[in-house]
Length: 120
Length: 113
Image (cartoon, rainbow over all chains, first blue to last red; front, side, top):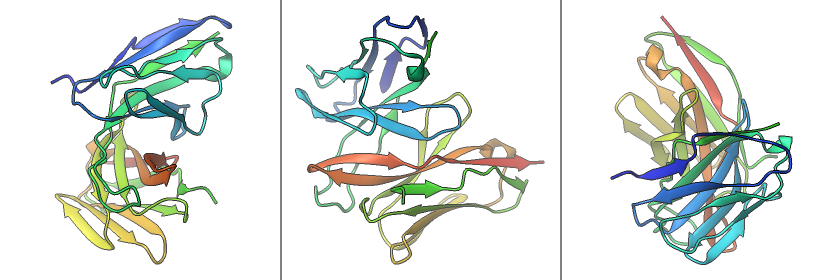
């Protein structure tokens, strides 16, 4: 059971280049998330998905795109890399079973190992 | 006010002491709260979740939730150097009918021998 996997582990991009960060999970989770973490900071939500074909913006979506064609995969696309996108990117997944109005539910998020991206 | 706020620290405690980590939250998050531990260069890992008012204990860890005062805390008893890490507080945010986690900036804990 691999859990959440991310590739690549490290990448250096030049300004204006594009790339796709890959994320896959084998736990049949409906929810998947992309976060970025800048040095000494917490996690900022970029995009999330509640199931195949459904995605929505998080706190910091500008400069990124996502798609979710299968339950397992949730790639993050950077079209025109900028130095401000230098960060560590984490993918996560969860199986939300709680009531939409709040209250307890099984919404533990499991994180991948991260991708360290540098844009020069 | 930010949705989830934490003191960035560092919080320095001697080995064997109790480490107390605090987190406050706004009305914009719901009633599910989580503590994640993150070692330097690693991904966050869940150590505790709490949904109801009061205390929840798991080994050396105790999570406390006070909904009236809108704070959640994590106590680590008998702190060990291996507990040195950044502790992230997170709360569930329900918007548009969908569940998301909002993270605080994290508190760095240093346990010294």
